[in-house]
Amino acid sequence: MKETKKESKVEFNVIRTLNVLEKDEILNNVFRKKNTMEYSLLRSIEKQGLTNNETKTLLKELFEELIIDNKNLLEIYNEGIIENVVEVAKKLPRRYGKDKIEADIEKQGGKPTELQLAMLAVNKLKNIYVNLTARGIKDMVGGTKLLSESDCRDIVAVVSTVEKKLKPILKRKK
Image (cartoon, rainbow, N blue to C red; front, side):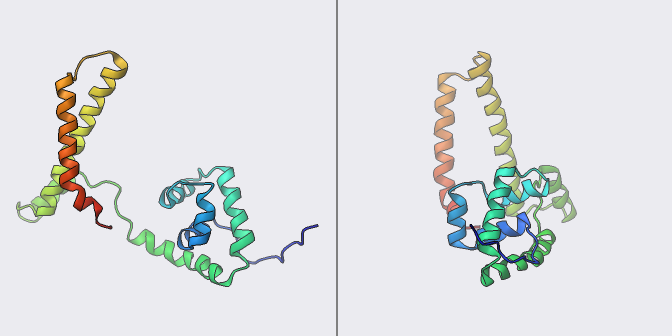
């Protein structure tokens, strides 16, 4: 018969448990064997109240079996209260679109910075992506012929060129 653990005054919290798992290499490896979703996505899902029971059960087991009885892990768990408050204060917007960038440029006298020009170019690239994706789907599923074989070769060549040119930039850590 399994011994019951002493009652703990620490209450289980999904987000704080995820924070501990993310910071502890061993717990991270244990958790990753069953769940490969990014921690930020898992936190967002939890904040919306959409975490599935299987994930919650796994997290609660890790919390009760490993975190509660380990002083160092428990400290990280309790620090999560403070970190979540700080995280909310410096949360980046999900989107910073063309209109917002253009408004910023106007506020600073109409002269865009290199970063603003780059972000406007990225917005153009996103629009090209959306347009080409829609055409490709229409051709594959809808039976249309919006993209010729030559168009497809051009798209592949351009994407390869863009990838090669941006590889050093995308390689850098955030």
